[in-house]
Length: 71
Image (cartoon, rainbow, N blue to C red; front, side, top):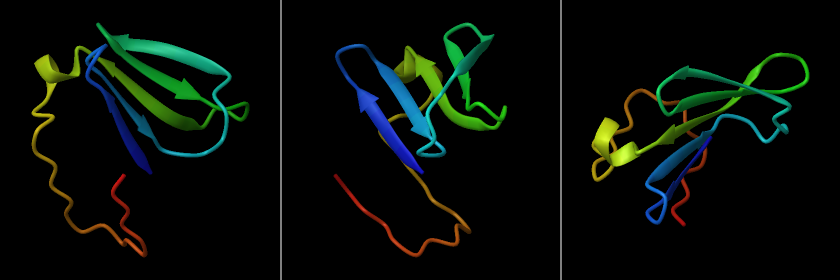
C-alpha cells in the first residue's frame, strides 16, 4: 500500500494494489474509488484532502508490516 499526496492539487491517492485501474466510482464529493478489471478495489483518490483529513499526521496501528519505506 502506498500513500501519495500532491500539495499542488491537494489530492491524496491511496494505492491499495499495483494492479491498473479500469473503472472508477465517485462515492462522495471528491472521493473516487478505483477498481481493476476483476472489480477489486485498487485505489482511493481524495480531492481537497487537507479539508477532509488531517494529512499532517499518520498513525499506523496493528498492521502486519514486513517493510516500511519512506520516500
